[in-house]
Amino acid sequence: MKKLNISLILLAMMALSSCSVIGGIFKAGAFVGILAVVIVIGIIIWIFSMFTGGSK
Image 1 (cartoon, one colour):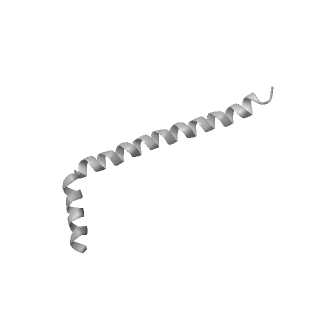
Image 2 (cartoon, rainbow, N blue to C red):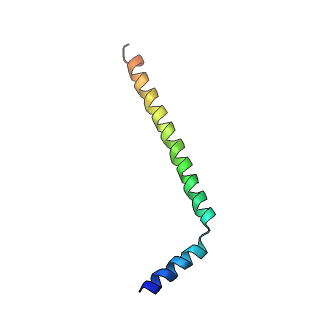
């Protein structure tokens, strides 16, 4: 059983290049970061418009 786990790990290490895995993680992280910033800015604009536009 232990030999099977080691061979699966070795197969995964050979099949996946570490650079491509890390690149995918950073691309996903950058996308999530940009999305979070856009959402926070949208919420701030929405709250600001509630205070300025609601007093008519």
